[in-house]
Image 1: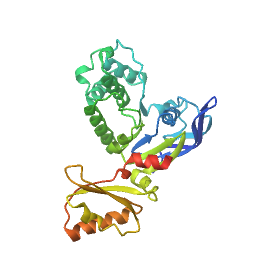
Image 2: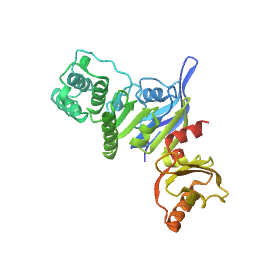
Image 3: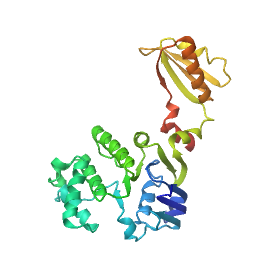
Image 4: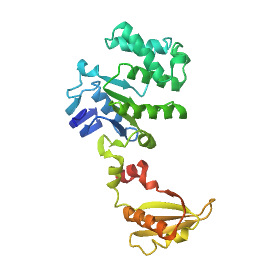
Length: 309
C-alpha cells in the first residue's frame, strides 16, 4: 500500500530540546496506535503531520504532499487535540457547525454534518446546551464530533480517551474499529498501553522522539522472544502439568500456588512456542481440565518494557 504518512530523517527541536529525532516512518491506511510515555514525541509528530510545526530537519509527506500551509491536504484531515479551548457560551452543536464552516463547507451542509456528528458521539441530547455545562467527558465527545464531522480521509486523535467514563471508552474503541473497517486512516496517540490493544494490532512505539518498533503487535512481540516468558496455568492438577516441563531445557523455573479458589503453576520458559505446543499435547495425553492460561509477557506492557530496557 502507498503510505498515508511518510517521513525521512524527520527531526524537530525547540531550542536544546529534541522532541522528534531522525524519524524514518511509513504509516499505511488503517488504524495505527501511536504509543509512548509522556514526552516520547507523539504530540509533536502529530502537529508536524498537521502542518502546525515546520520540520527542523528532514522531510514529511501526508497524503502524498508536504502538509505545511497546504490547505488542499489539511481539508482532508480531522484532528481531535489532547487539550481543549472552547468559547464556553457556545453550544456543542454551534461549535461543530462553525468548525465545518471554517473548512469552507456550505451552511446547509455544515448544519447537517454537525447534527450527524453529534449523534455519532451520542451528544444529540446535549448538543444545544452551552459547553460551559459539559462534563469533561462531554467536552471530549464534542471535540471528537468536530473531528469527524467533515468525513476526513485521515483522522488524528491525540489521547482521545481522556476524561471518558468506562462506557464512553468502550463506545470510542468500537467507533475507532468501525471507522477503520470503513477504510478511514486513524492515528491515535496514547500512553495507556491497553488502549492500543483494544482498538488495533497496528502500533508505532515512540521513545525519546525515536521509533522503537513498528508493526503488528504480535510481530513486535516476536522481537523479544529471546526473553523468558512467564506462563501461569490454572487447573485442579497443576503438578500433572508441571511434570511435562520439569526436565525441559527451556524451562527456567516453576512455582506452585494454592491461595486462590483453584491452584496453579507458573512456569518460566525461554521457548514459548514449544511450551504451548507441549501444553496442548499434555492436555490431550492426560485429559487435563485447564481453567485458564495467563501470560502477562504477551501483552503490550511487556513488549514496551523489554524493548526499552
